[in-house]
Image (cartoon, rainbow, N blue to C red; front, side, top):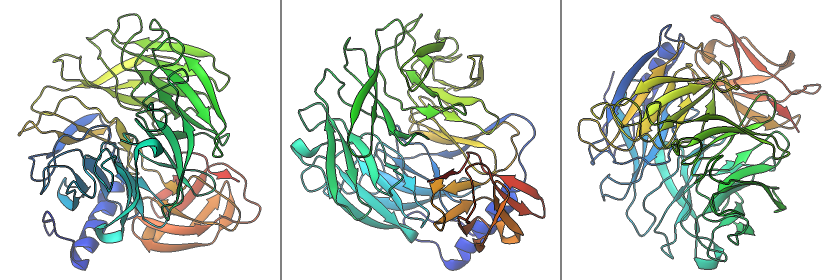
Length: 460
């Protein structure tokens, strides 16, 4: 298999080989729990990935960002193939943005969007797009009252617009903004400290159409959870008090029953942070208080695995005080899956993602062979699945389905309603949402069996 060379685009042969290999690897999932380090960041290939979770592109490659390193020392955007070989898509320069703290968002057309903490025309950060094959396109430059220093990533609303947050700007306490894919932005909300300040996490688009987020400040200055509609209707859902958690750096994830799950960085029974569940009516339940030995400071956003459990990371604590990977059930039973020890990474700040091969992937901001962070894989033996991009649409819309061995797909169904589809590659097909479709599981028939979507598809 040809090697990927940093700072160069892949040839058509390289790309085809990577896609074919990814399909072969993702056809089956490991049957036992295994942890492996795939990449050691060295500085030249990136350094210090922060709150950036990886994302799977329509080509089957995993994409991510580092907040520093690269050709100019101020951050990178990279792709990683299944062997852990990196290709740098973009090295930031500073004037056109620097220090991308968050991960990327992928759309059905394969365009990825992200944010930088600083740089841009006014040095307050920017929103950018990465076109296929790595073309970098700055879309929006933040400036003062219109927002600044976006730490979180972007999320796509039902109407196709992109929403995000900034830590500064507005009244000085941060903003929520909405932007068209073409780069026209509008401020939806300016925080005033009493309703929160400095939101650092990517927003969650819930099934009810509202967006939910976390921020500092609030009634007790311990942190808040808020909701906001795509047109800017803002409401405070919960104010933390310390005993139930404080300092919210991570975002939220939606459970199968419609409740929201998240973490606090500090507070709780042992002041090591918490995992909590909250209804959309604002009733909060603390599921777990970390006690240092099982982890400390859970900074990354939880994800819901295909087994129904939640998976996350802690920045410190654990057996070696270098952080952990853990699993927690919806009722609060926590299991430590891995204790970092420095040589295999440390301080995993960005949480995990589950690829369509069933395995989990994440990054650490420190440790590894050069002390500059790692990319790791954790297999729990979960079976492969497919993912719809986006996870919602109207009848007649064209969406993209990600998976493996899709070149051999024989049919696609929306909760049993057959749909017309087009094969793009071994890892992606496009499909038209059929008339009569109802919300629910999307299934793809392949010679290896039925692959089902990891989340229910929502018909708008």
